[in-house]
Length: 143
Image (cartoon, rainbow, N blue to C red; front, side):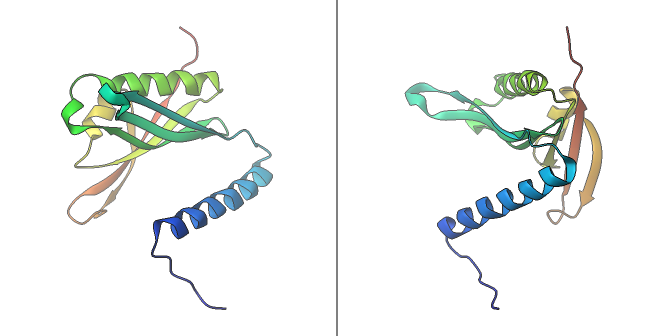
């Protein structure tokens, strides 16, 4: 059997979707938990363009945020805070007890710390000259 290397976005996206589905099926069978749901939130500016957004999923008592982004021209206006607070609220509604995300050292680690996240791991040299930092935040249900 040959290894096929994908070089187009369409091929990659199809493979990524296929693999994500297979891994979820395995994980759900192994844990007995099949409650996964996508989680996406966005803030739109004039003309309905997305100026900030969060994308991830919830599964097995955890909210994973894979992407958190605020347009450079819109930073400092509280959009990131609003989005994370809304994601936390939705995660709680879905029964999640924690949130997990990663950021690079040159992105927003101090922002996440201000939002109550704690560093749980750091991978030095990813990318070269920087690090990939994993954060977690315990969610407290109730007022």
